[in-house]
Length: 83
Image (cartoon, rainbow, N blue to C red; front, side, top):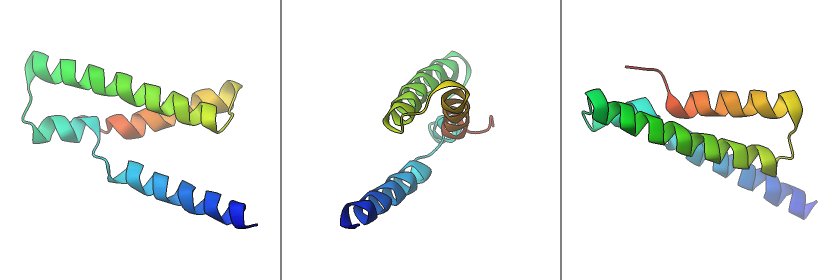
């Protein structure tokens, strides 16, 4: 039971830290990037987010459609809305 509570606490804290990170589009706006520099930044940021999301899905032992859906949602949240 103690290990389960530790897991739940860790999962909650990790989701909070992910939510506090700014999205790729917000970071690009804060850095006042435009044109090719913005596109390169967003491409790298999306690539990094995809890697993080795939690792998180693997850690959760997701497979098939659940894995793909989870990764797609995770990347979309990390990239944010275009500004």
